[in-house]
Image (tube, rainbow, N blue to C red; front, side, top):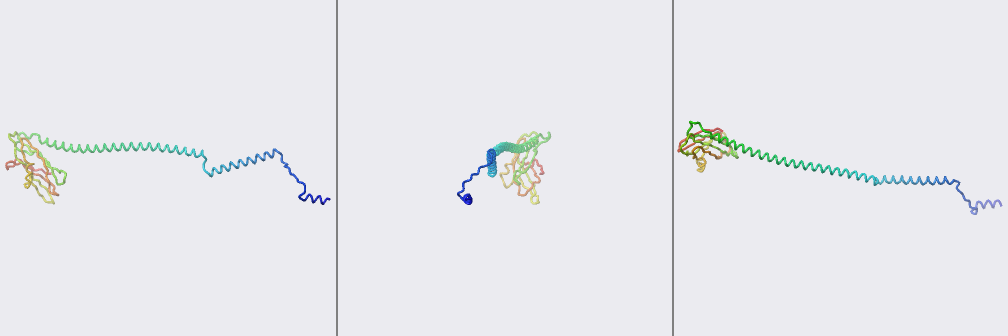
Length: 245
């Protein structure tokens, strides 16, 4: 009988045995709370780790965007100020350039006016009365200077009949232009005998004074040294003077 009872306990037909927890209820609640807390901490840690891998959060991005927008507005404002400054400087440069061009133009005009006034002054100085005892035809002034082209020369002559002339003087001017060309001294006559029309510019007909102006063309490479001016009438020389240049 004992063997039968022992074999039944060792076989599947043995009665079921139930095991009950021996932990008290407060301890089981504490363990449950601890498990939930650990799970929550693990979830937060996983979230933070995932956010770190995925980049900054929305708040950080918004702050960065706002910062960049502020910098952009400041840059645009600075660019506007610089553009306005550049525009003002360009306008000032244009005004100064226009003023400089105007001043250069005025300086050129004043230079021309000064030359003209000097010529007029020399002319009127030559009109000063001659000596009280002077009489006859006198050469009061003569000038010759380049006229643009290298070989072109312009001359100005003032002839006066001194004293108290009773009739007009009728005659002509004759000039002998002495120049050097290729190291040799040469001369040319005005008016040119080969050019009949050249006599008309040198004809004289006046009571008190007459101003004679004209141009002449020198041979290429010629340099004027002196000019002999003669006043002729009826084949006679009434006045003669040599002017060195």
